[in-house]
Structures are given as structure tokens and as C-alpha cells.
Length: 67
Image (tube, rainbow, N blue to C red; front, side, top):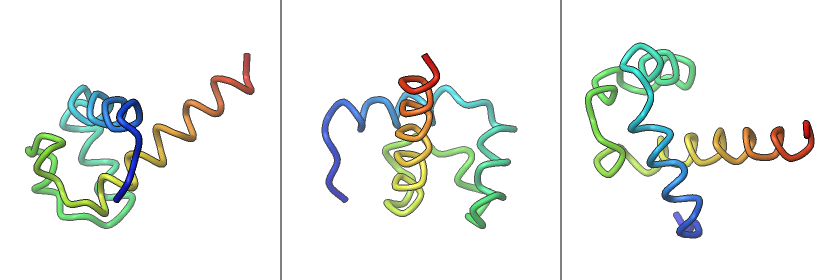
């Protein structure tokens, strides 16, 4: 998966700062193995990283348009 450096760090920060409960909710929502909730961003699968990047990107867009 290709992403720019800024988005990579935003997604990494988003995941690493989520509580375990919120990680579990996100994993359940997208039908991922719940054991990933214990993993750091660097060790989760690429398809989960893609979901996180999209969530971060959407949140960024809402912030821009909501302002």
C-alpha cells in the first residue's frame, strides 16, 4: 500500500493512541481478528492499515469542511 509519510504518521498515531476498547470496536466493525488490538501499528496487517488510513482521511476531510 502506498501512502504519503504524513498520512502514515497520522494513521500510526491514531491506532497507537486508541484505547484497547476502541481498537476492539474498530476490529469488530470491520471483521478483523480481535487479537490485533494488542498489536502496535507497525505489526498489523496492511488491509487493516488501509482501513485506518481511510478513517483518518475521512476525519481530516470532515474537519476541513466542518470548519
